[in-house]
Image (cartoon, rainbow, N blue to C red):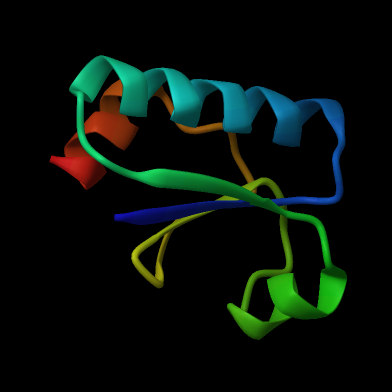
Length: 76
């Protein structure tokens, strides 16, 4: 499973990345978490608000910090 956290590196983006990593660790699922800061790559997902979370190529969350419970639902 491939999870991407999209954002320029602001505090909200860093918090979203931490929550995603915590959820992956808690679930025990084999997943890679990648931080994407390139504006053109982010725009390529059709995302114009950050932070955003992409799971296996599908945008799951845009413009807000997801809750751990939401992330666990997406990856299970």
